[in-house]
Length: 232
Image 1 (cartoon, helix red, strand yellow):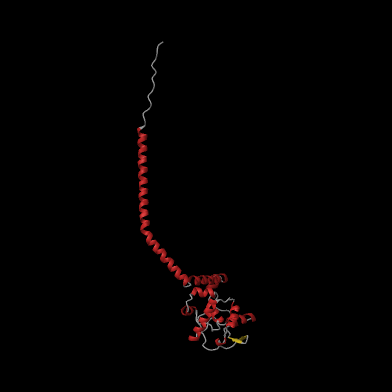
Image 2: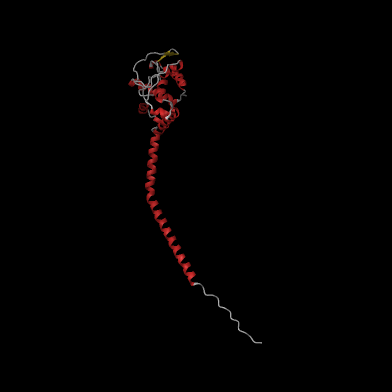
C-alpha cells in the first residue's frame, strides 16, 4: 500500500504587535499610578504643613465663641431674634413703610390697669420716695409698679413681689437682690445689668438666666427699688 505524507500546518506565530500594545498600555498605566502617588504625597505634605495653622485657628475661634457666650452675646442675640420674629408676625411690609405714628385710642379699664402696672417705658431713677399710686399690704407703690419708698422693703415683701413676677427665688436670686439694694444704698440709683455685672461676679448671661424677662426691671421690682435708667 502506498503511503502519502500528510502535511500538518505549523502553529501560528504569536502576534508580536499585540504584546507590544499590551506592554505600552502597562507602561502608561504605571506612569498614571506613579503620577497619582506623587500627587497624594504632595497633598499629604500640604496637609501636614497646614495642620498646626488650622488647629490654631480653630482653637482661637472656639475661645472667642466661648468668651462671647459667657458675656451673654448669644443670649442677647436670641432675645433680639425673638423681638424681630414678633414684629414680623404682627406687621406687614406696608406697615413698615408707613410713617411711624401712634394712634390715639380711648383707654379702657383693662388698658388703664396695664398702663398703671407697667408705667412709662423708661425713667430716670428717683433718689427719694415716689408718689404713691396704689397700696398693697399697707405698702405704697408708684404708678410704674415699683415700691414707692425703698426703705419699706422687707424680704417677705420681696417674696410676694417675686411670686407676682413669676420668679421662683433661690440663693442666687437673693444674692443679686442684696447686691442691688446695697449698690442702691451707696449710689442712690438702681443698678442696670451692666452695673450688676460690675459690682458682682455674675455675668450678663447668668443675670438673664435668673431673671429671663426684663431682668434689670424685674430685679428692681423684687428688690423694692426704683426703675433703673434705660430699662424697657
